[in-house]
Length: 429
Image (cartoon, rainbow, N blue to C red; front, top):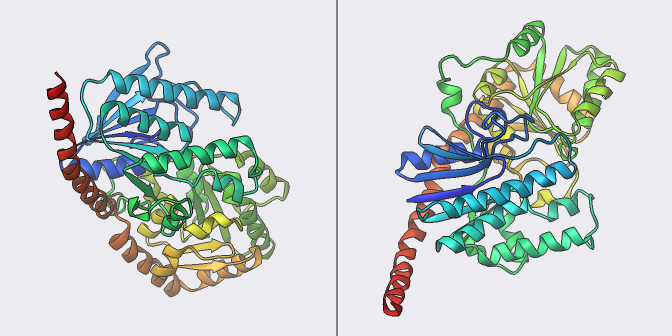
């Protein structure tokens, strides 16, 4: 079965950032699927183009453990300005043009909405190639923008995104969603939930149980961890954006700094708020806070192994009523770390796993961290339950099996339709 997947921000192993589609595709390839991922050469998380450094090369292909990546040359950007918008258009144009040039016909095309154009390109390619289209909506657009208060519901961009979302819902054979209650959102939009495939984020447990030979933390990170030896480390891995609410974690760090609690906050990642957060920590003289650059996904287990608790901070936003699926959460769970959530509501996965604790204020988070620092038995109990839940429900092997069953079902249904089309063309000839 040939599967084409359009995700502007997909990343290969050996780099920072979320590897959802690579990990999922690797498991599908092990089941005999032929998977091709069309992705941008410029990586958003690291702000670097390591895939096509040559200025005159527009397309490059490379396979990683049976997963074929088609890298499409795109421009560099540093901020959310016109250069990033141009990067989106350039990726979409080159992905569409290159896909149509390829002579083979995929059995399924998946368009992943990290931005709307990539999903739309997936639909257009599927239509041209005469195969089913799967719409993967990673975030609910434009609902996320509305619920975070970034724009008005009457904003022309919101109206356009809403119309595009509904169009893709209607055209898709399947709607792949990452949130456990998002099928209700789809029904609210007038679309049958029968189309929905719930496929949350997951984790490659092999990275934690059998690290690849030679995997190591960057030297600077290793030096910092050695300097923190003996302290309780609360770690955050992931994006440093407005929606990540990390400034509230710094408030908790300030409380613990004043208490000289021996608890250190370690932030690994990148994002538009990182410089501001670093400046806040500096201005407040928070010597119990360290920021490091994004690290290779394969090295994340090494970082978490040296930590004592994982952190997540949630804004009080309506979007979370549909569910949550944070990459960082499944990494924490796979590493047997207890997870502390700062917010008004617990993450449903953690609640079901009984693998974490909820704090509703910076002061309460500080108190809960002290509780974990002083109670190793509680840490181990929460961590082991989290790990067991991840093994059962969130390994990529398990999630790939779910998707593969849907793909096989739809492929069988598609065969009679393709036969009818072929017969019709034969009669017309």
